[in-house]
Length: 122
Image (tube, rainbow, N blue to C red; front, side, top):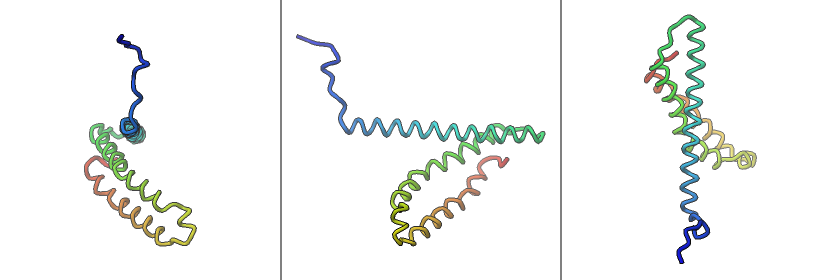
């Protein structure tokens, strides 16, 4: 006898669940970063309108999207670094990790002007 009910369906494998969770996380992060970029576009556009300037929509949108997506690219590394050198470890005398955080943050912060040249600085 053939039963077409849902009772015969196998539960998804752990690998499938992991991939599904990862895909949902990537889509959620992409949506969050896009929202942040659009909020930044809106804020800058309001400021420019308030000052009486014209809003270069295309350049402004490209600039803000590239800025926020660049930040998103570095986020996995920064999260890994933060997990690797948690505050519990830092309070136990590992002062070199403070230096590592400072150096990495300075490196990423120093890259920002290079990405500003792709769009309009408003």
